[in-house]
Image 1: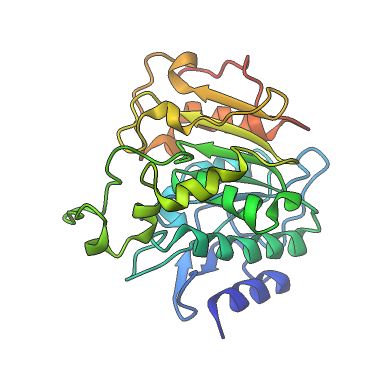
Image 2: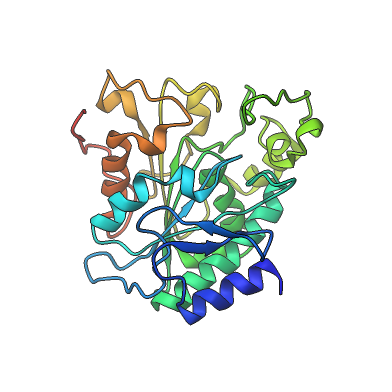
Amino acid sequence: MSLLTRTVSIAAAAVLAGTLAVAPAQADIVQISPPGANDWSCKPSAQHPYPVVLVPGTFESMAKNWSTLAPYLKGSGYCVFALNYGETNGVYATAPVTESAKELAPFVDAVRAATGAKQVDLVGHSQGGMMPRYYMGFLGGAKYVHHLVGIAPSNHGTEGVIVPPPGVVPDPDYAGLGCAACADQQAGSTFMQKLNSVGDTVAGPSYTVISTVHDEVVIPYNSQFLSGPARQVANITIQDKCPADLFEHDQTPNDPVVHQLVANALAQASGPADPAYQPSCI
């Protein structure tokens, strides 16, 4: 049985209660979900009608990337789901971004089937905040997404180096890593040109981008921002809200300020996050 088939069937049967989910590329490997995620019996409330799907970044597993945000959102009353994707050579989120987007599509379908929701909210970090734009713009996913919240997303690529796991030094084209996603995320790559050929946004979903001036991976940090009308797009710099916040790229999903900004974005019935919202600076 293929990974995606197994993932969808498990979701539809609602048997992933609480803590377990199937790895995206190897059906015989069971991965640990972050706390609060992948309770397939969860039904969205009237207050929080859209299930939240958490999409990790390059080299990351869902368990590591969302260990704090998943329980925060679950505790706030959301149905929370997360996935691993794009595994190559035993490392997640390293496959070509176009292929990873094809893994996101059936996972969203499974979440919608299990919860009865017509649309989901997507929250992604780094590649996970950008890759859904391909799903929305090229794979017909826009009609299934209410809001995309990107945390330090690589929306226009990076002029820097995407940091590999410790001890691994990439060559200039990342061939030594087997990381096609790394090459895809370089500014000016063929993939980036295609992704943005349809514009930064597509009709329907709302977009919120949350960035840090201390980002050392997706640089310049303001390349993460999306162009679009205020009714559809909000670009938020953490330090404009909390100047002393020192969080960098990798740990932004664990920033309590980011948690509040994500919650504000998800709380909007329509449109992006409220740009005037002031989180508590912790």
